[in-house]
Amino acid sequence: MNAPLFDTHCHLDADRYGGDIAGVLDRARAAGVARLCAIGLVDADAADTAGPASMIALAHAHPDTIVATVGLHPHDARVATDALLEALERLALDPSVVAVGEVGLDFHYAHSPRDVQREIFRRFVAVARRVKKPLTIHTREAPAETLAILREEGARDVGGIIHCFSEDADFAREALDLGFVASFSGIVTFKSAQAVREAARVQPLDALLVETDAPYLAPVPHRGKRNEPSFVVHTADAIAALRGIDADAVRAATTRNACRLFGIPTPVGV
Image 1 (cartoon, one colour):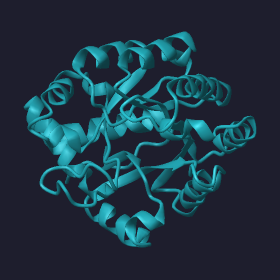
Image 2 (cartoon, one colour):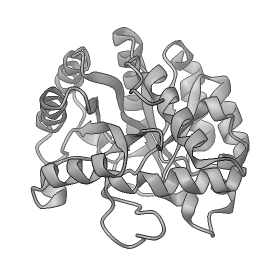
Image 3 (cartoon, helix red, strand yellow):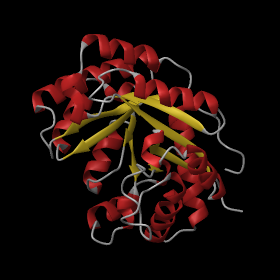
């Protein structure tokens, strides 16, 4: 029997799946995905906490399966206000919320000015430290600045996840020194992603997670389709193949790691 899996990063807003969240959850369970972390993000157009609150409500409705986060994507850092950050901090105190995020830096696009992204990222690190919960970090084309802010703002106190890991093994080692583990998405199944694949091969097994980032980044053999949590099995199996170990060892280890980081019970069978 395969060990249960934990998709540590998925977006479960109903409109992303044609309203069929029940079907998404059924397919995840059938694939052996025991736990899901639903990422609750502020919608930039509304600039309110409806998105995070809806993921918390979903976690409350499925307490044995779903946990939640609250955050503001760096693309949308421009909409941050004191009131919004205070409201998110209050939501982060909910017991079903296991992390603050995703937050961070994205210098690939210019949806929010870089100086604003930096400021809001720093403020979210402070939020995580106050609520004593780990961070889920989005970083794209900003590796040095991401690590610098985590270091300067004392993020080591709470640790967290480098989500959708897309850097190299050196970055992974530096992040781990700060208490941040690497979460690998379907990118690790892409033959062209050699640096990411090498990082997954050498990352310590007790500091490695798997995720889908659904509905984005579907892994091979579903590349180009809408992603969903049931597909995380392909990511775990690809990592096992890269490391030359049994797939069940990766499934069990990544689930144990996620539960330890999030401070929740480990599922039966791990």
